Image (cartoon, rainbow, N blue to C red):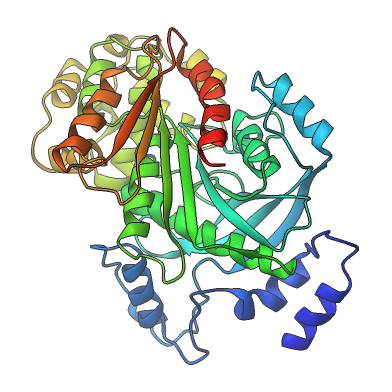
Length: 432
């Protein structure tokens, strides 16, 4: 196996990746950390998964106990999706409305499919965009970029060349960083549906994407350093804090927390969903419908669709959130107001959550309720009508209660999507 990896590396042209599925399958076992011994059982693999996600104890299927597992984060395939000069990167960012002043290098980017666990702890695969600078440096500092709410699997960074998330990855890589941008589960080339807002799935996919990124970069004869700088937008804001906490608590034997810069995150999810139930935010029905369908799949939120959705939408709404419908298709098929889509009884349940729903929401209301070892740089716009500025204040208050160092940058009268384009160059400067 080692000789095969050596031959593949020797076949590179200059600094170009030996980025093929052959390399991925031949070299993953020798390049990945952590890895499992050849005699490991599925129970051992799940024990490793539990260590990667503190407090999580995935079930072990009895029929699979004696099967040989694959290491989490091991690479399944690598496909080049971009090879850009610095000038081309700058043009791409300018087209997306992002300041390109910090661009220094050309960038090569690949869609990487890797092994991970699903929301129930079963083996699955996910995809991510891995982007690196074309600067000849052997050791690169890693950045994880965590995207916002995405309903269509084709809109993520590894697939959509025109997405803001692809642009974000290009920006960080063009400053000299190795970028890991996970698509999350059920998006990109990942099977199934996206477990929207599930903490374990979010953290697991991001950590395993980092491991896959390390393996791909090592296959190119380069290394990534230990300290990970993390940023994310909207849904990716709380995800930034969760992944950061996992790294600080040593969820991975190699990577450590380096920096935190969440953008426009819904850190008070209970209040956010209640606002959607009251039609107090933009696209309230779409946000709440995505949340409702995803959480029913995860946590059995209702007994039948008719308990949550009014007719005739109760017959169609679940199928719309299969990852294969675009946001515009979903918006056209549903009423814009939550009051017209949901039953009043269900809206009351969202406004005043109890029991299991309350407990699940609390996990996402408290993603800032800890003391990071690094400063937290929050970015939010007072003009945001999707995710209110009070969410940033909520995060600030929790960080303050733990004596954490933090700073909040007001991005002004920008809307939700404009805020990320405004914040990204500032984050890139902060991560320099």
